Image 1 (cartoon, rainbow, N blue to C red):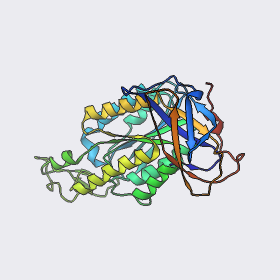
Image 2: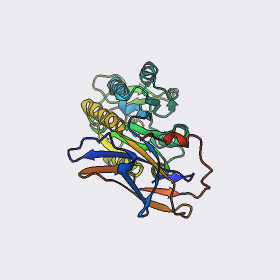
Image 3: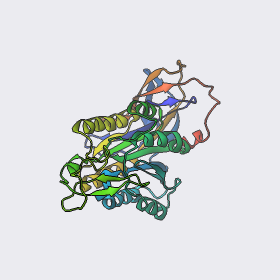
Image 4: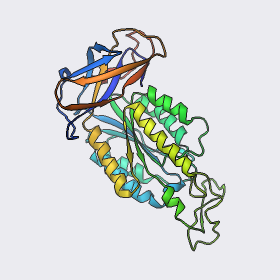
Amino acid sequence: MLRVDTALVTVPVSVMDRYGKYVPNLRRQDFHIYDEGVEQKIAYFATVDQPFSVVLVIDTSGSTHFKLEEIQDAAISFVNQLQPEDKVVVVSFDEQIRVLNQATSDRATLTRAIRRTRTGGGTRLYDAVDQVIRRELIKLAGRKAVVLFTDGVDTTSHGASYSSTIREAQESDGAFYTVNYDTSNDLGSMGQGGSIPIPGGRGNIGIGIPGWPGGNGGRGGLPGGIGNGPASGDYRRATEYLHELAEVSGGRYYRGDTLVGISSAFAQIADELRRQYSLGYYPRKDGQAGQVRKIKVRVNQPDLVVKSRDSYVYSQKKANDKEPGTQQLTGTK
């Protein structure tokens, strides 16, 4: 869903053929969009050759400690696969949330930002998603998305929750592409012995590596960090969360349980973003504030599959009360 705070409704759309290949050359007149079953006039159309903005969110909690350099490599590769004019904001989170750069297309700046990510302790996943939606996405105009890399297990969020962030994603105008990196096998196979310091001088996280002095057998660490780790139920809930976050926002969920898998997921996301359209329309029929309204997008060519969000939250405002940047959705075709 998308909460519409102006009269304009924007919908990211991907179109594929029967073989799963993206179709990049469609025009405005090829699309039809329906709101509660009523066809709408497409007022704005962003083509696939218009720049995209991405918030790249990287989980750097303790569970990623031994894979951080490889994760950074995959993230840099992802950035380099975007179009030269596409802009990226890099955000990392552990028990802290860090916005490492402002939106930029400069690859050297983005590489430095990604390399500055450092492993911490707990995991403020829900708080990070909340901050990205409320503070970062809102700054971006035109086609935009969030790419979230995490194991999905939250341990230390202070304000946001599973349900509150799902609701925010439903009301956001950016799709979430989630890459789920399952750390349960890594944590469970470390054996005993060892710890790493928690930033801020608040003790250590037990990591359980054979031969490390002072180890505690992997016990006594932060849940979701590298210590005793989350239970299998936490990982099931994490997977459900990342699936739901992608589904309600019109994005896609990926598994990345190996470093090869991470790179593959990032490559597939970059491929889709390069070929995504954005449609905009003004609802012909007023609704009630808070009403959930259904959207359906179709194309008038045979054997094509359309992927988009399927609903939004209506909020009644005057048509001339538009947020800055709305006009940037306009296309030329």
